[in-house]
Amino acid sequence: MIACAARTGSTMLVRTLRTHPALLVHGEVWGRRMVGLDGPLASLDPDACHALEAQRFGSPAAAMARFLAPHGAEAAGFKLKYDELVRPEWRGIRALVEGDVELRIVFLDRRDLLRRYLSHQVVLRQTGVTNVPAGEAPPAVQPFVVDIEDLLRDIAETRRRTREFATAFAAHPSIRIAYEDLAAAPQATCDRVAAFLDVAPAPVRVATERIVRQPPEALVLNHAEVMAALAAVTEGDP
Image 1 (cartoon, rainbow, N blue to C red):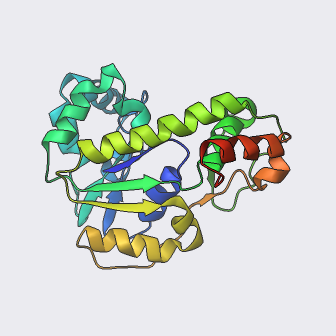
Image 2: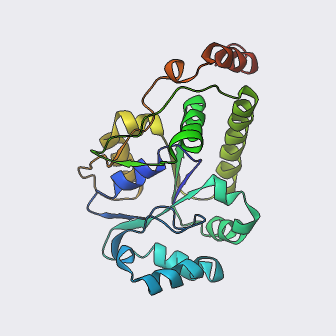
Image 3: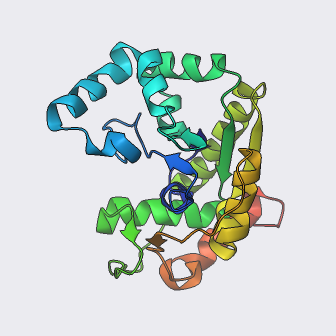
């Protein structure tokens, strides 16, 4: 299971790992909507797909077994974001994951939490686009003013959730990777994941485009104020 906050490159990781011939990797099968099915489940007819969507919460253990069925792959999995895991409606799913200590966890982080916040704000404020397939043009992004208090709350909450789930899944075999490493060296990062899953390395292809390409100083109209606020709460090191 890939466990992560939103806007940490999880779609890039899922779709890039899918290009490994021995892996079957679903997307947000336990989001508010079930999206990103891989393998034979991606070909379900509408009635069967609707039944699986209902089964996710009605019989979560049975749905989990279907999501983890390898269908000939050497390893199978899915992603589940902290945004869902912290909600009361997902309490049963969280208990199921916590109780299955043989489930291997790939923790995906983003070191630069300012850029994570900016990416999220671009989706909410401007584009509504959460991913762009490789080879397609990303949407235009315009500079904007950052709500500094909202940014600081977001960074604090992202850090809190990261600590919470590191503790919640401490009994599981796990590996921690970073978006920045995935973006800079996708093959090496995916080789690490494959080794963690006891799968031989194989060539992979990056399957998504970056949406936000401007550096923060070009994207944030009040960049100086933002950096000063970050420095103030991190003892001079933003």
